[in-house]
Structure formats: C-alpha cells, structure tokens
Image (cartoon, rainbow, N blue to C red; front, top):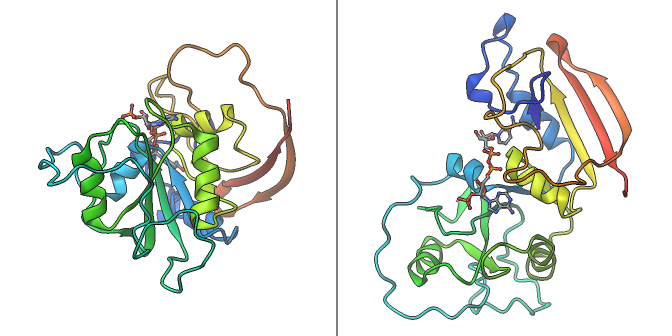
Length: 238
Ligand SMILES: NC(=O)c1ccc[n+]([C@@H]2O[C@H](COP(=O)([O-])OP(=O)(O)OC[C@H]3O[C@@H](n4cnc5c(N)ncnc54)[C@H](OP(=O)(O)O)[C@@H]3O)[C@@H](O)[C@H]2O)c1
C-alpha cells in the first residue's frame, strides 16, 4: 500500500511530485517483489478495475444453485484435487457482499477474477458472473465470512498467500479477522490533511471496536528515490 505521511490512501487526491515522480508507480514495483500471483481487494477498489457497478441485470434464465463456481473447470468441483492444465496461474480477487460489481471479462490484466460473495445475492448476479467467465466462492449468508473465504481460496484454487491491496475498509476487516501477517507500506512525501472521510491504510467502518490495535515488528526499512520510505512489518499476535 502507498500512503501519505498521515496514512491516507486516495491517490487521486495527490499532487504531482517534483521531477514528474509518480509515487503510485511504487505500488506496483514494490508489490511485484513479493512474487505472489494473487491479489485481493475490497468492493470499492475493484470498481476501478471492472465495468460500471450496480447496473440493472437481466433476470437469470434459470435457478442457480448456491454452490461455488470455478469458471475454468468444465464441471465446477471445488473438492477436486486434480489440477487442470488450463487452470489460471494468477488471480484478481474481490469481496462483493451485495452483488454490486459488474464484469465484461473473466480477468483483470490476465489475472483470473474470483468474487467472494454470499448466498443471499440474487440469481441474476450469479448468472452475470458465470456469463462473464468469473469464478465465485460463497462464504456466508449476510456477510462474507473472511476466514471461510480464505480456506475456500486454498481448497479450490490452491492459493496459499495473497497480496491484500486495499482499500482501507477492507484492510481493516482482514486485520480484525487476524488474516494479515505482514504489512508493506510506502510512505510518500505528501500530507493529505483531508480529515476522517478520506480512507487511511486501515480504515474501520462502523462503530469503534474496543480492541483493534495490533503490535508490529519492523522487518525492514528502505529509503526509495524522491524521499519515499518503504517499511515492512510482521503483525504480532495479540
Ligand atoms: N494508495 C493505495 O495503495 C491504495 C490501494 C488500494 C486502494 N486504494 C484506494 O482506496 C479507495 C477505496 O478504499 P475504501 O476503504 O473506501 O474501500 P474498499 O476497502 O476498497 O472497499 C470497501 C467496501 O467493500 C465492501 N465490503 C464487503 N465486505 C467487506 C468487509 N468484510 N469489510 C469491509 N468492506 C467490505 C463494502 O461495500 P458494500 O457495503 O457495498 O458491500 C465496503 O464499503 C479507492 O479510492 C482506491 O483507489 C489505494
């Protein structure tokens, strides 16, 4: 994640830096060093990589059973231990509790798209995902059960590690669910000063939890060009 010195993450608000330095490009270059071929984001962030959200969907022509759908397999069998040679090797994953995302293709820049959603979304949404060639995993009824969703990503797609890539609200949910083991933060020489409505690196929505803070261990610190700082932390158990 790239942040300002006050921890804010809305890159669209950031001014140009001297020497045409594009701070946001550090997001990709540092993420690539981890060599983890799967990234996971919240609904708002995925809207930037998909079709316009919330458009009205046509009725599904059939009733859709509430089972996981693995788009790349001829018959979707999440229990199958047999690796299909056609199986995708890299993944773009998003949580979408209410079924608001829309897709015109099965991938983001070649990374196969998987949606973590609930059994309460309408048939029209599941039919839309199937038609677009997008996979989905059902984890919960009214909200996405994050530990269950992570277990399903492992059992269905053999995904063991993920790059959690924002935004702040979803990062906070993953942290609260104790599913974040490392943090990689690029601090750019920018201060946002935009107040509490601007999301920060971990930006919990709703009432303030009593116990949310997690202790960290600094793994590394590197100065990058143009005054950017790259900090990596391990999240310690509380
Ligand atoms: N600087 C960076 O490195 C960086 C990286 C990534 C993103 N960003 C920026 O971050 C901004 C978005 O951040 P954000 O915090 O507003 O949104 P976000 O975390 O991407 O998405 C939050 C939304 O996801 C849905 N959601 C579903 N399940 C959730 C769960 N368990 N926990 C939390 N949310 C859940 C909710 O929408 P519903 O209520 O509709 O279900 C919620 O409002 C974008 O502008 C993006 O460009 C910056």
